Image 1 (spheres, rainbow, N blue to C red):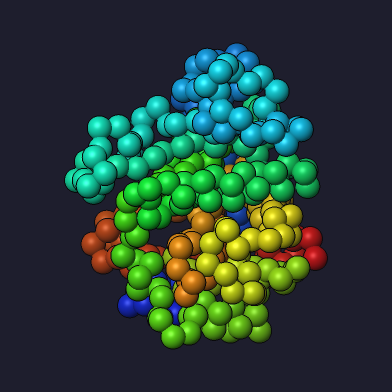
Image 2: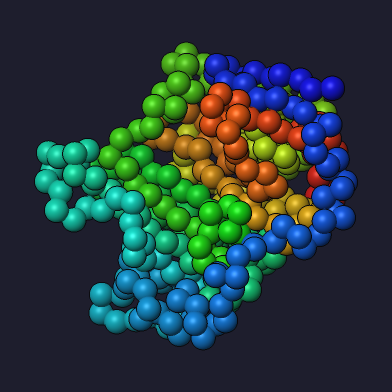
Length: 326
């Protein structure tokens, strides 16, 4: 039977309609059907512009991370021994070019950066080693702090699209960062001003059947208000607002990797997004949302803003608890 659910505190709604789709365990039967898809992004290492040795096919690196911990740009030449490489998106949604200091909004001021997560063509975070995933999260933190220190930047969007169904145009594993001259209005709605609403959510979900994992100060749960099948939130139990407050990079990194690995164990190759929700406000509570892409929004969702989810979050949590590392 379908159920209409309201967001924890916002005026948003979703419909949990398990009779419309597959049960959680049925996704395993469709292993391989939902991979990254799209032959346009299936190129070999020789043609892949993100692969080691093809650095000249992208803009010069703005930050290059190597095994000795050195972070360099490529103003003086290409760095060949990189492990993570950051550079401007060739087709940016925002750019600092041609903007005056007084017209950041009007001219489309901002920055759009690609973060190539590994020099290896066929690896992605669900299969990263402890060192690889910890390095990547450290890069996320470093680039976030860098851009939040740039004059005119008020907000940094940090996200990963994996697979064509999730919006990735290139197969090689990468994330993106967009620095904006404004704070999106949604984030103001999520701040109460007196007490943290997300601290209350974490307390509530920590005792619910939707809890997937509690480890090293991180809560992993399928939210009561889930817009997508197998949507999962990762949040620190301790309150802090953004990546600048992340002291133990490794603990979060391993939780993120293990969640993705568990999803891969259930689904095989699959498309997904993960998105960092954070802002430079002490009242906000950092959290990361992971969205496997098993469904797409259609006319009803666009018309109403109400999403239909064919997998109850309680069922999704039970499936993931069965495979995630304790």
